[in-house]
Length: 155
Image 1 (cartoon, one colour):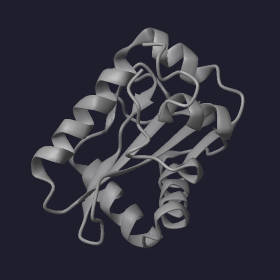
Image 2 (image 1 turned 90 degrees about the horizontal axis):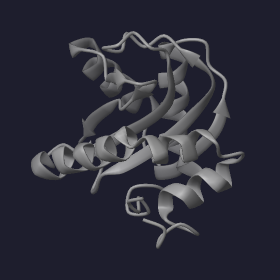
Image 3 (image 1 turned 60 degrees about the vertical axis):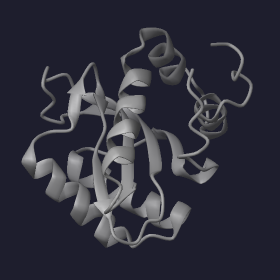
């Protein structure tokens, strides 16, 4: 599994998150980004909501990758949430979403933004990785899995 320690901090990863709709999810994502990276929660929520209006970032299989660009960032950052119960997300296959990997990039990050989206998308298309992600029992285990803790050499 790819190592995402360059994108994530331990406090940007949550398992068993309870939300009942996309709006609540985006609020939690914004709050988490504010706490983990010192960003403005309202700005994060506005940017990912604006992007979502262009088309759902739910790409199927119960996965969403909401993403946006922010002037206040100096590098690409991520927030990962596993939902306790899947929510409707207007995904392409209409399957409710339970894995959310939000990406926030600097406004001028063009190629880096696209490369990172591709990296995350590759991870989340791999059934074996998805099963491991869905099977974690805690925030710490989820972070260790994504940041390459005990599984760095297992790929």
